[in-house]
Image 1 (cartoon, rainbow over the protein chains, first blue to last red):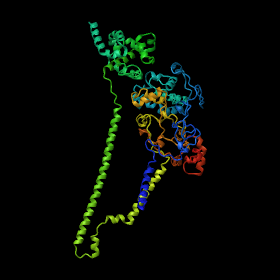
Image 2 (tube, one colour):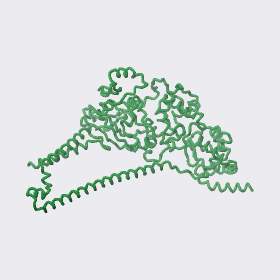
Image 3 (spheres, each protein chain N blue to C red):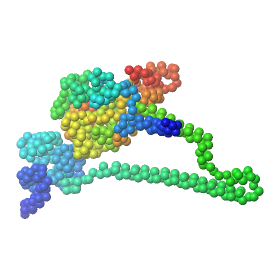
Image 4 (spheres, rainbow over the protein chains, first blue to last red):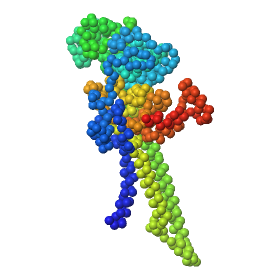
Length: 208
Length: 425
């Protein structure tokens, strides 16, 4: 090869380098180039990071089972998920000492007699207000049923009028837990203590 | 005479409402109840004051499950007085279960049709019942209201878009004018040089040196080949290439800008932005656990069991729920396994806003990784962020000890926020 050919090749390389480097960047569906990938991917099962491709990371793999280095799925679980629900009937321990809420979904009469185990003070009320803002306000607004989502749903009742103004704390707790009418069940999003805190604030709104 | 009139009225009414009625309850039930309803429909008051009182009662007690025009949880109440007799309606409102248990065919049929959903008992006086029925009758005669709430944001958006275009146009006009002025200056300068050269050349007594200078031609090629120009161009080129290469190298392992397509076209812009739903509503773990959590389908269903149920994207949630098949969302933020990060620690204890790390998530139709999530990024925040120790006795002695040796406020760095083993172990 003569001198001028080398020159052209050199220039082309120098020009191509920035373009090449720029293509390492993450964009849209491309995750970008990984650096030291063996330290990026968990060996243990990761609950929210399931990698189902058995070939993933084959090029750095030294696994005994012949699968890719990054393969991270539990084949013994349904849908190869890494998370599992607790075994039925197990009782989770919590520092507030709450036992599982065992009143049946349709048993509104028993639920209505249930009493709030939390003290009636401002600390509980303000905690309730914060939680209410996060979990109830989109639909119920400030107790008037005119939240941004409530307006779309239509017919979200006001707390301080009609039948709702007279509902007992146990009834409100039951409604949060299992939902009522078109309201969904929120028992999976809020633990018992949080639900009772919200009940306190809803009761304050009933009086408004 | 009166009887004949009411019979005429009845015939007209049944003719008009028959289509609706056939669909819902079948012709036989209508014939059975219709005769009675036509006769006592007149007993419902039409006084505007009573109708007004009825509206308040309806909104407070019934609107949760019923609309006059259209079905909600319970059936549409349009033309109730034409379908049912007043006594039946009142009994059903007061205690629907009693009516159903008495074996009333219509009540049982309704109960079965609406999925055995119990309508709660109500404690109304007879006047209140009359008022509610009056309102329903009055409202039935009106045309259904068309919801306009959804059109408003669209109009607003259009206005904003227009403003954006206007802004852009304004900018380009300014730029164009500036360019024009520059070109004009160049032309004027060129003309001046031209005139001066001509003037000098015409002068006879000009020295040879000066004449050479005056008639000098601008040599573009010579200028390009001159050493300073070659040096500066090379320097510029090398600097640019080096910078791009270095930037590119630093972007390896950094996924900033990653915005994968999700299995369901969920928009944070609509949910968190337009409808102001708090992040915590769906990301339930954010104050309690290491992970913020991806909501399970039952949380979507809290609203979407009634909202936008015919949307193609929402149908995908229904399919997931029906088949008990998890939705396979694509994880956007992948912190390397070598670093530990805890959401609860930062959000609950530290009081960090979601947007600090995730950007203006309420404006993202497709979620994009906002921060670079590099160690330098973590460390600089730990250096700058002050610890809110107020009202927390845990920090009392720490703050005291810190204040003895430093005048700067207590930062995350001071309580061990830069120790390697805090995040790497």
